[in-house]
Length: 259
Image (cartoon, rainbow, N blue to C red; front, side, top):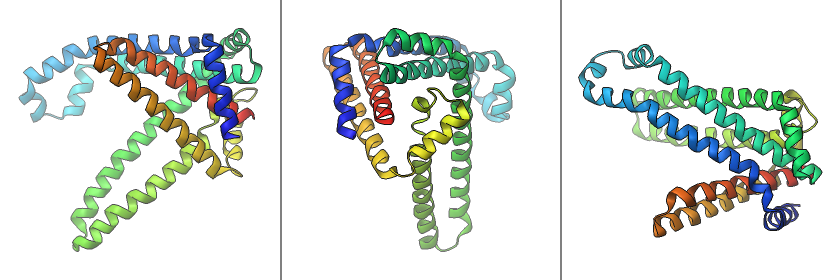
């Protein structure tokens, strides 16, 4: 099942290069967003450096929110748009894996754009919660180290708790990794349930498959990064590597789910 999905993915990418189009659009959107964010952050960063003492002697978060609310809004809106376009691209790949027709896949994704926006909100909320939980985790770890008198006990706690959280996070991520292909012909609630049920009987096989995808993706990114550094063309090779990697992961994930 794993090998079959990888073979179908490689075959599609080699003999039907038009399949890279959805991720091309997503990458262009991402690059535009990065440039916009850099432009928007230029004033806040320069002022923070120039007025460092003022920022350090006041409540940094409140001061930043009050002074740069517009810049924060632009950053969040830009990030949301990039996430939405990327999800639409992944859903298009999932539709292609099911129909084997890119034109139909694109049309279907556009027709169901509301579903993509809902999924974007879901992922955006999950990402925010993960960030908050991670901040709380860091705070708790500091408290444990200060409160526990015995250094051995505190070190064990600092090892055991992170390992447990990593295991829980890995399980949770694996269970939800197939939400995007599961959205085909399902609403968000049912897609989450379908993804959860899909990995119930084949959790370890799905986990290994996801790990293989991520390793291959990392390998592709590394190759194109090194090529960019060697030829001094990172501004070209980096986006190409991103397009290939994301297309590969999106297609392979969808083929594995539908098979």
